[in-house]
Image 1 (spheres, rainbow, N blue to C red):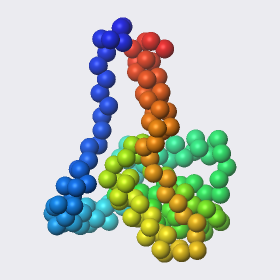
Image 2 (image 1 turned 180 degrees about the vertical axis):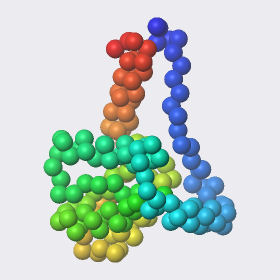
Image 3 (image 1 turned 90 degrees about the horizontal axis):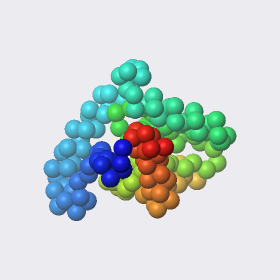
Image 4 (image 1 turned 135 degrees about the horizontal axis):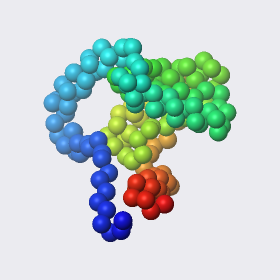
Length: 163
């Protein structure tokens, strides 16, 4: 099949512009408080590959990283809805003997979560552990975009039989 005849959709989460959030702060704070309640109610629910494929894909990804590199500690930390939380994961890494903790979002491009929410969570974790070396690695640089583009092109080419 000709590449020119192929339509590709990059399915995305979507995000609200940061200036809109600032202009509608009260409404967003109310929505955030509802999300926090839902998150707290679901964080410790039992999970399986069928009920939470995201969590298990993340765990599979962590296992693949462990096969390639040996770090003092590597685990997922979740913003919401699942545990452990990012601060709990930072605590776990420190308890496991990590001298430097890097928080890397699984988001590949910048979003409100990666530019605002996760950095705020990391700052709180740093404040709780003032002597710890905790850093946040923001997504969306050109290297990540180029690698992601190559991965997506390979998937597209394989799908259309143009490997």
